[in-house]
Image 1 (cartoon, protein in one colour):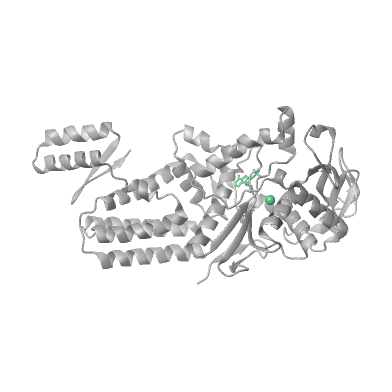
Image 2: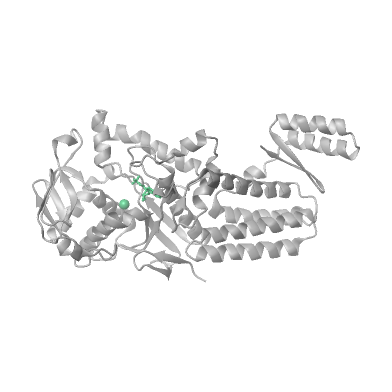
Length: 465
Ligand code: AMP
Ligand code: ZN
């Protein structure tokens, strides 16, 4: 069975096959670095992480590129208001972004190209579009001529007839031939202060859309496999990327376009402009662990909106505690003689996990199979059917699954601590000899060390609070 994804291009679920067998080249639109990213942004980056991790799990060699938008109106305004260079302004935001990615367990992309490092590539693309009759110049600005691309609007399913085609537009700053045309290059104006590039097409700076066209072309070629981003990027950003890249190359930009739905707060999109957002740090300051945040943001299907609530965070915490408990049970499993039952449970639930994920990354269903596995493992544990052979088998499977999930934290759960282990053993011994005072004394000692002890048949297990 092959992997199937919903392709925004066709608005259908399609069998996925990359251009080159076994290899996937993907591009994800990255952050605009003028502020700290919020967890809505991270929902989209976690979706891209899940996609990439799952393709790897399915044996593909994945090469992924995520751009950093470090040139844009808000950034230029921000840098000028602080009287700093562009880089001095954006560097700390980029650092914070990488730091948050790391905390959330998002695997790094292979490349993070910055727009400001690729101005010559963008200028060349604008020149090429102008040579081919797809771009024109008004004063210092360059615009994409939408009329030159009959298929414009198909990707975003736009009703082009509703737009007043051919109407000349003039606003405070830009003058263009047609209301549909969009800026490729913005000529220098005073508000840009010290932020500009002197190039073959004049002094100025690139438009946002041309940044992604130039960088994806440079690093992934003219026709790559997956282009991903948040659903708000379908129009205008991705429609315009398609217009630019395909008009310049004559080739299809990407085979699959995949879009993650919004994270909402009280029914509205989480966004900077509405002020209804939380950053990762905000949630950590409230006592939530990055792992719990990762789980909560991943738990919904990527194509469905997800409402952010603290009840959802509580549910994430409880789910992870169930997983941790099971992992602790395994660490302390003293039984044995259940290899075939264990192998059957592992096989059944991993197959269900894979089938769900193959079906357009149906993560909620895949997660259900993880909890079915946890339930079965707990039963096998209680029945004393798990010994070291079985535990090794289980850990191998869980590690493979965690290459996709990224929140099981198996090594941490498997960690041993000889001091705690010997205290737990001493307590078990005290209980066996009915020395309750001693058993209570040790439990109190462990509790002071933030260790919780649970009594199981075959021995106690411990975990950190
Ligand atoms: P930006 O930094 O504004 O360029 O956005 C980075 C990414 O976050 C884009 O792919 C957006 O589509 C995505 N994004 C922004 N707001 C949300 C949200 N509330 N939920 C999910 N994704 C979002
Ligand atoms: Zn982009």
